[in-house]
Length: 277
Ligand code: FES
Image (cartoon, rainbow, N blue to C red; front, side, top):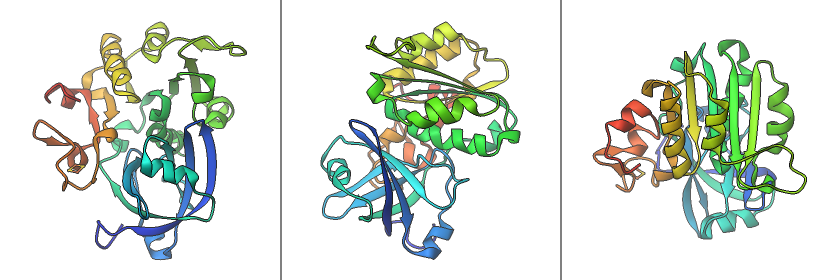
């Protein structure tokens, strides 16, 4: 986006989807046609959404840049700002600035088999990349998606998860919930344990991970054990980002700023950082 990077643009909410009891996806369109045209993001980047009178929050862009007509943000209700946003209806205005961060390494991923591992709302940034890959299907190899949440109600993007993605060529989707539930005949268990059962080969494949910090840590260990080299295990630390542009000093790990150098890092890079991620 051109102009002052701190200057939010007005955007209109054009669609709201209830994903889970505490997650909604907001589809927004920037009001200014020039700003809309200039907004070019990569999967894995974030934007700062502002709710007037409440403040702003860093939210990952969950739509693919291949779908140019809108941007989508999947927001969990966790505090005052996100609580206010959850009260909004279609037609309401928000502020939006960005995109920020490095995003996923698309050039490295091209031609590769991909394994996505997500937990809960952590599927949001991966969804941007999954739909990017599916919209450019010939540019990538096989796609496996391992995703879990606490319960069926907590699974995000259910239509894509159960209907759209499994029908796409060369895509397999594995879904799990943490505990048994009446009516669910799918897999039960935590994501890292399910991954250990599935035991995908690390040969030539990239793994892309996002979820709760504890899940990320366990999945990183699991993948290393399955033979994925650290350079091909990629995760995003977007939850650490606040201002998004290197000003607030709240995202550092040692001397590394997540917002200016990440939020996407491979495991080789993370292993060189203090173990506080
Ligand atoms: S998010 Fe503010 S300095 Fe990085």
